[in-house]
Length: 252
Image (cartoon, rainbow, N blue to C red):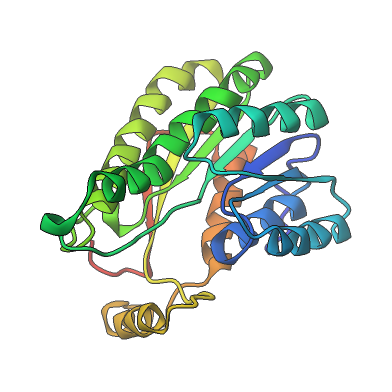
């Protein structure tokens, strides 16, 4: 946490996929900047509750809303709870994502739609749910986590790349449509981030990327959280419609 003076006091933030890694770090960063926090997770309430205790320890109010952000009706219900608790949610961070690998020619309709729902449709649902309150307040921030899948196409990850390219397009459109109303929309494309992966092969893959990074280290969740905190602050208010690659200089 940077704990900078770019205050978000009096504002509330919704973070999807907030139980671990980048989502957790973002929640704590925004709380350190003064925001009350709405934590979302899909299945593991225990980890979200643990993050909630950390947010409370920073002196902020917190609400845990469990649900699948890839389902419109569940986002509507979560937003109802969040708005009842805080009145307006001023910052939305779309972090939840899945990245399964499967050969394209073996992919079923269900395989495809599961990824598109989670990695793309979710950001439409949350922006639609919380956007009116931001517009009414004349101030809002939407931050979408895209990753390298929004820049490259990867074998075995066709729906992930399609969703993240789509998310980048959605970000640019929201920036143009909502910017005049005081709401910015930006994307962050993290490079290799060393985090709590349960999948050992994924951890090995991330560590293998070290040689591609000029600064000589892997990224951390806190690196991404610090950038998110800046974009969410008043100081980041002139940044709109951008995708910022936070990757230590790795080629994109």
